[in-house]
Image 1 (cartoon, helix red, strand yellow):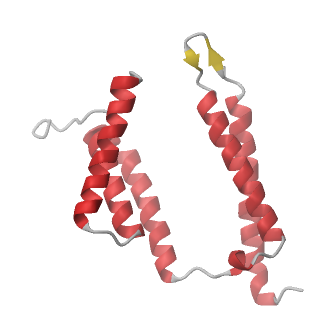
Image 2 (image 1 turned 135 degrees about the vertical axis):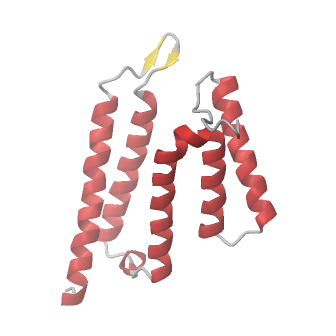
Length: 159
């Protein structure tokens, strides 16, 4: 039987797992409203269907691990964990609000560099090299190889 002090944590984690399960089901349902494949190639519903399926599988695994009482699921988050979670949320908000102004390449460079610095202890040259390589490869793959237009920089003195 669970102690009284673990009950709020238990309900929160259980609700999170069930919420992710319902959200992934909605993503899959929405993706099936679009075409999955056409004569021109993959349709607009394929990518959300794959991601929704992956999220569904992971949320089911998380739910089973939590219900089985896995010891890793019972650990408490420290202040450093909350700080990292907050920084990742801020980076997502940064991407949302700055993508049109800074463009895809610079925004993705900043996000990868800050994420690597905050989430792991790496050398600055390694961080810069990986962030630059990731940003350039994404631009080359999407714009050149796939022909997908990406947001470009709207700052006159930098562009």
